Image (tube, rainbow, N blue to C red; front, side, top):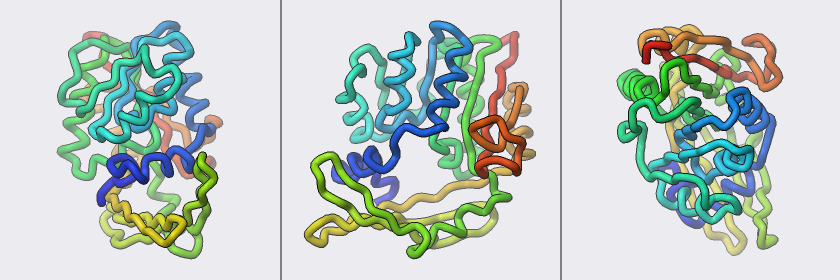
Amino acid sequence: MRHGEFLDPLLVPVYDAECRWGPDDDFFLSLVAETPVARVLDLGCGTGRLTVALAAAGHTVTGVDPAGPALAAARRRPGADGIAWVEGTSAGLPAGAYDTAVMTSHVAQVFGTDEEWDRTLADLARALAPGGRLAFDSRDPAARPWERWNPTDSRRLVRLPDGRTVRAWTEVTDARDRTVSFTHHYLFPGGEERLSSATLRFRSEGELRGSLRAAGFAVERVHGGWCGQAVGEGDGELVVVARSSPAG
């Protein structure tokens, strides 16, 4: 199944158990806090880990994701009641409705073609209030992280809340033209195996800056890691903060 961690009810809790709060969440939470009581869009919110934290910090938050099972898990989180959860994509966003938009956990890489990415940026530019901010992360292709996505280096154990342990590993199935396809394997106790496949696009810093500029954004800064490191000196990330046109 493609994107099984968000679409397969059996894998959604595995994703939550494996992807816990981290320095990326700290970064985005602190960034949003620079605009007190902001109207925040979390595009590609998944199971809502950061979304509910943003709401708990006093912001008015909308979480948007196309994956119904992931949103169902998000709605069950403590503190989820005050959040507007929307099953959909950027195409349905209202105009001028948000002060800040975030795309976390490398959601930006899911848009595999330039057309999809440009359309998403145009939607976000329309949805942000004049001068609103957009922040997102994308893995730096110069770090070549997919070379470590193999059954040996990626092998791991994921412990679920009910005490069961899931064995997991990843294998790359194709890598060319900065587009990487891979499959996650999940082996449950008793021998049941589930697969989740995906394809990600790796864009360079120059490509990201160019696409943002074309969509009407001004790039404020690009970090190479979650502590503000320079590109190439951090965590193998491109952490981008941009601002929409003051004229809307």
